[in-house]
Amino acid sequence: ADARHDIFFNRSSAPWPYLDLERVGRAGGSGELMEGRTPLHVVYREQYRGSRYARHLSRDELGTRFRDIMRNLLTVTPNTKIGVHLVDEQNGPVWEKFTHVAEEMQLRYGPWPAGMGRDILQRDHLPNYASNLAKQAVERISALGLRRGDVFIKLGKRIHMERLYLHGQLRIQPASFFSEPNHNQAIRDDELSLSFSFAMVRDDFGKLVRYSPQADGAAEQRLDVRFDAQSDYYLYCLTSSVEPRLVVDFSAEACVVIRDKGAFRDRLRRAVIAHDPELEMHEGPAIYVDPLVPTSGRPFIPLSKYFGYAYQDEYRFCWLPRRPEERLSHIDLEIGSLEDIAELVLLDAD
Image 1 (cartoon, rainbow, N blue to C red):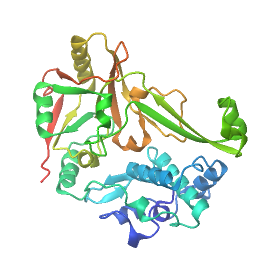
Image 2 (image 1 turned 60 degrees about the vertical axis):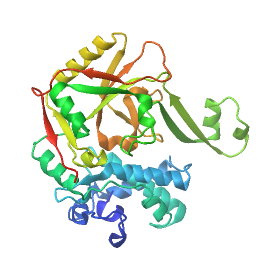
Image 3 (image 1 turned 120 degrees about the vertical axis):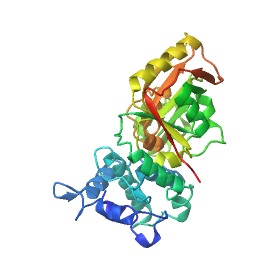
């Protein structure tokens, strides 16, 4: 999207404080982002008009999608302001989704910002990306000279990160744990199911559903599909991101930066086998699933996550019990000191 024109449109009423508007303006360089001789945001809008995959969403659902997309685009700049990622290989698809939401709003309600009220823009509470914690995160993580994917990073309370670093003490939680309401927005999620949603013409709907009383009515039908895990399972998550904003998102007091990922993986695997050799281990980067345009019709839920969390860039270790279990309890492990393969970064949230 043309970041200078399609992000906030009215700079004087930007919904987020401390926004680094200069950096937003630089996203488009000296002119609009182009594909050939056509502005990229125009290409995205034309693509969407040809396949309005979000046309069945309610205004409230469309607003939720907008906020999820924006959450993926936000970053903390070197001068501790809220910025947005530029249109590049990693974030280009997110900007495309952003422009599609803007186009759907415009097709329904008229020129921007029609339809985009404060109830949509300000519903979620954003962490304080202009805080002292954010400033420290920028300084200390940037000083490490890390690149995305080079390391695993575990974020958390100081006491837990010190125990992980010095003794290798860690807790593997069941997936059911993460839906508890006391977690903050970055942690709370349903890790036991994934939902898809589609708008389908009546003929295509009839091919999937043998009989529906609604199928004789409207030319289009809404199809909502939910995939449920067959069992609770164990989950241990780290991040491959080196974005300082994650420190603020997770209200972290410290983090452990694991430079030898292979050694950590082996120690963790051996410790789990010693605890319960029947657990079936899986691992890999989280597969972020867009419920409107999924890339697979058969998601593997333990390694999958809703696309609104893609900014977390998770790497997941999960273990499935041999027999389905409705609810598991956590496992406490000790894999040995990480001092030889990691470093501890302490942060002061005051």
